[in-house]
Length: 111
Image 1 (tube, rainbow, N blue to C red):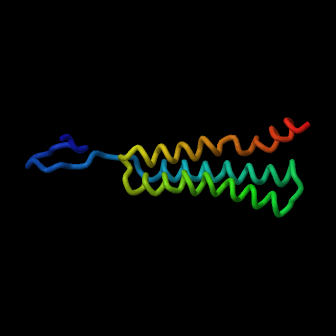
Image 2: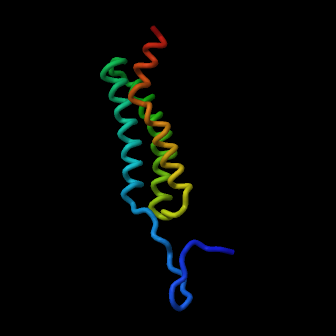
Image 3: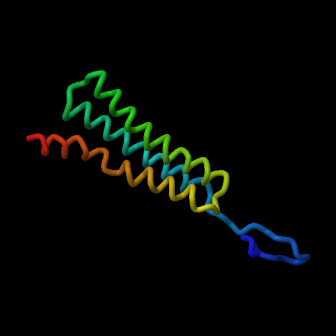
């Protein structure tokens, strides 16, 4: 069985250097920024400010922001060498990156 690490003098196992917390936080903040921008575009440009628009946007943001990106952030901070946390962070960002354009695309499809 092989473990992650490198042997040094005395036979002790030293962990390999792993990415720092900076990239994990950057991915999480990018996901949050995309979701916030999408909600702002939906409210300011396409749809009038209404309670149902805010609820729908907040529910959509929570589904990906908390569902993927936050779980990925926690995993990446606690176990940076584990790729699952980074994959969850990337999935949250991938799902959020089109959020600012979604209201405009929806309006074009309706028209």
